[in-house]
Amino acid sequence: MIWDLHCHLNGVDGRTPDERIVQLLEYADRMHVDRMILFMGFPFSADPTPAELRRQNDQVLQAISHWHDRCFGFAYVSVRHVEAGLAEIDRCIAHGPLVGIKLWIAGRCAEPQIDSLITRCAELNAVVFQHTWSKITGNEPGESTPEDLVALARRHPEVPLICGHTGGDWERGIRAVRCCPNILVDTAGSDPTAGFVEMAVRELGPERILFGSDAGGRSFASQLAKVQEALIPEAARRLILSGNLRRLLTPILESRGVRF
Image 1: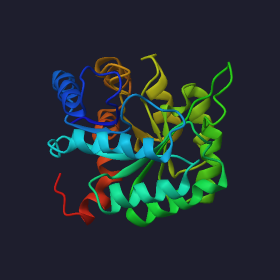
Image 2: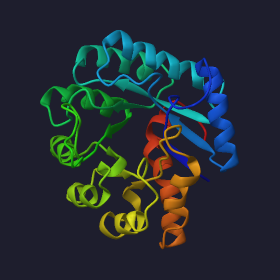
Image 3: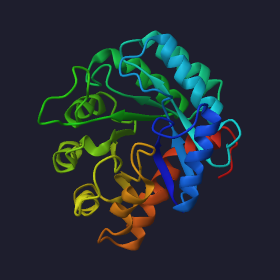
Image 4: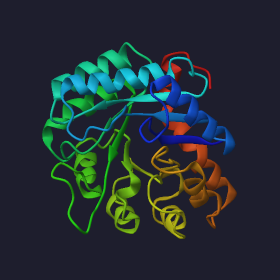
């Protein structure tokens, strides 16, 4: 089975969330992707207001509303609007169908005001996904690096945290998070260069790696190639493609009586 951690409505054809999810699922079917996690609406907003966060989460809620057998969702929240983020966590996760949060580039995750968002997610067994990147041209002002996520992980050592994109520069990202066993890495978004998954398995162990595509910004095919063509044991490949994400989601899904 293939469970994709990292999918978007942005970059997909369609005027409405319903039209876009149908298009995304058509692509997923071609590549035998069984389950997807969806987060952020369209168009992307790097520094969203509370109203924009709610609007984009409503788009995700609508998109998955007829596809609960195929799709899960994360709530888009921002470190710049903590109270609004807590309200969205309660609305979309505690009292809704979503199963985690997505943090993007409005504020760095090393900032202490994020802690109440992480604590609330831990109470709900909700998954925490943080976009990370390390750019030689310099990051956006609020864009987190893997090193920022390490700072957060050390404050919350019992909470699993996902390092989105493995920092883009995956060699640096893998080395940065190696010290924190509660950080998992996401394969999504970079080109399908050889060696990424092999290094991650060697340095982190296969249990800390999650397959993600970043569709519709990237193709399922190019991102699956990283894992399917990697020179790793078949048992490790199965963990990366679905086993680890299933394990991560098990507490919140079982608490809701969801069978999967």
